[in-house]
Image 1 (cartoon, rainbow, N blue to C red):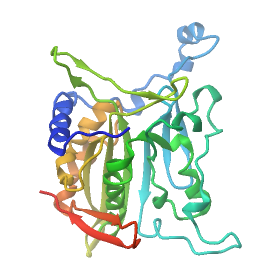
Image 2: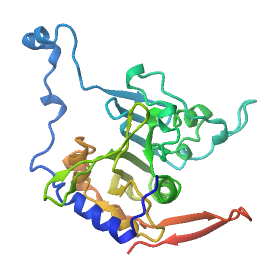
Image 3: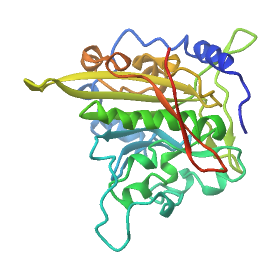
Image 4: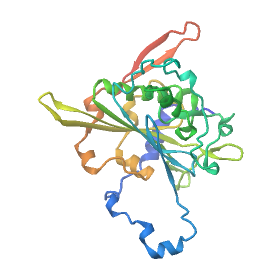
Length: 318
């Protein structure tokens, strides 16, 4: 199932969809403000036989951490810490050989309760790719780390041609290449469900659900949010320069020529849409715009079927 919208239509729709995503005038509640439900006698009495949730399963893996959304059957968000060392392929130390994506297989996550799992059969003939939220290429430290990126709890339905296999993959590569300019790179991937204005003037969120019976929701958009750090100068290695940026892409085919910066959005817009807080107000205020401290430029990798040789060219941001 592939989108056929032209680039300009996609950008127009994206802008329209995000126009209402203004952050609230106050910060989200801090941890110390949260009420511990178990210590409230009246709540304990009402929920004597169980707390219905909602529950976001915390997933701690070798190469990432994530929160899994039981209702949507895909991650609510994933988080990674990338460095030049972490994305380097691990040396072969045993008879199993080097870390190899070909050895990894998509599998259902048995750590999750059966009623809330995404199933392999949900994606079968769905028209969508099994899109990694944490890319396999980010997890080369060990075969186990790479295998964990193939758990369906790290997967969401993505349009294949023009998105998961192309523009989205270029963006993932750009995130890895940031490790060449920054000591630490933190990457958050967030599936989104954004409203669209109807012809009747009302806003609605409409999305597909795949599987038979319907089980896994298809996000309308995906966000990549990055936070980077490096020493501000050689003489002050302990004083860090922070940079940050958020990019929101529609789950649709995107032309290779689309400027990367055309998808840039305020981090607060992503937080407001997803109902999460990625960074504190102080961190966001201290961080420079990522495209001011490094090139927001994608490398387009195309392979000729006959010669199997990469044809590298760049999509330069406006």
